[in-house]
Length: 173
Image (cartoon, rainbow, N blue to C red):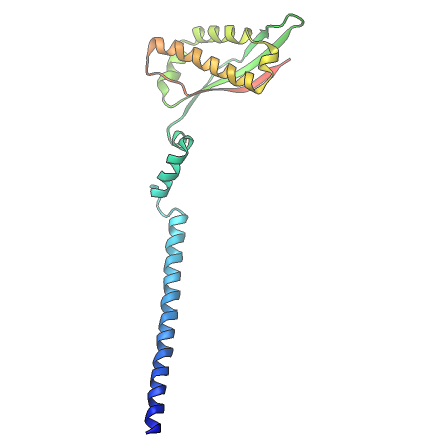
């Protein structure tokens, strides 16, 4: 009878080892499959974009703008103007580029280039050295130029909008 009890104990212990081995194999298999799936998802397995990319772009509106088509127009000649100053003569030389999401406003700018250049020359020559010499002054000037161009464009087409004005070169002395 004692031999039968020992046989029983051995059978239970033997079955426990095979269950433990099976459990370990299943855990390892689950980790490998889960890790592969996570790597595929994080490394961007499909180029169409997933739900997380859409959620991230909704948090950052600037990323949505980058997804749109962007066009630039560089003014052929830089602007060279005298700045307003009572004590001495100051000059400013500026190269300007315009950004838009469609070609319509850029085509209109090229068509109305004499009017736009005249307006920008008047705006630039009315600046004071002390004001334009600061970052805030430059940003204010960029915004003023953008609004002036927008005004001229809207006379021709209300839907012709530019997105930004950039100074690609600015020299003052």
